[in-house]
Amino acid sequence: MEVVARQLLLLYLALIPQQNMGLHEKTEIFLEVFGNSEIRNQTEETLKQAALQLSLCVTETLETTHSCLNTTLLKFRERDELTRIFKLWIQPSSSSSECSSILMSNAWDYRVRQHLGTRYDSKKGCFDWDLSMKLFERGCGTISKQQYVQWRERGLAFEMREGVYQITNPTLLSARVFNQRGNKVAVSGYWGDIVSSPYLSFGIETDDKSLLKTQNGHHIKTAQDISFANVQALFQSLSSRRGCPTTSQSDTEAENPSAQTDHKSLTINDLMRPNGIHVTFLPMDSLHKLPEKQKYSHFFNTMYFSASCVHHLGPVMRQIAAPDAVLVVELAKYILDLNKEQEAGFAKKVESIALEAGFEPWYEKKCNDVHSVFIPRKM
Image (tube, rainbow, N blue to C red):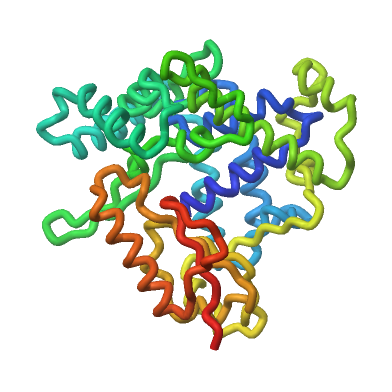
């Protein structure tokens, strides 16, 4: 449920209107929460205010439900768990901010030590190897060595202005169950990516070719610059889809923070409501139960499976896929610990699973090594 809580938070941030937060500031805060293990004071305040509003939304304290933050179909215990998580984000740490920072630095360092083992003492060499021999080979030349090494060492991917990044980003912490001497023990820590980097999401591709210019064989703009430009452009597009048009006044406010409304006065009802968009969260165990409900029969037009969820792709997906549905499955290109043979084997396995589930490759779609695309097989 920590992942669901984090998705709700990122949606909340994306939907903040320009009159409450300028595009530049919103992009900075979004990327901080999205990719940094530690954040600034200002970002923490925004996060707490968002968590407070989301808690009210989840507990149905508000009179209306936001169309993009609909959690009404979740089970009661799932909503209770979301409320518990949001409260953890809201309440100030009982210890000093320094101790809070040590928590994340320890959690991050534990994962790095666990991953590198005996190579930990020469970790910078390992980081350099992963970047130059793996990520660069996979077409990620925009990732800066300095920024990548900093992220690998302490989890700081986006440092876009002079500021102190020392407050633990609570949205990246979660509990994981381990077996210790036959007993199951839940351990709180950071269990996410420590190798591939958050730059892959927004920082290695762009429609603006000026951001991909090189000089003496090196990219002028970094993955951080490209991430910022891409996310800002996405937010600009989102603003143009809301119920009321973007005015020149809000653009002026975006550049003039003093003219903006205090973030603390922002409520769920103030968020943008993009035309024609609804986001509904389903129960955690709902995937294989959806075919049992008539309303989901041949309902979904697009289905996306990450590389880590391919094992959930089964024949029931065919029953909930619309006749013209598209199934997109992430491949293992950016799982750096796999070699070329393992990567190719994974792609074959994905195709085999999709065929068994009642789908076939979509040959009209230009193939790439990042995703496989399938369509329902004709009966």
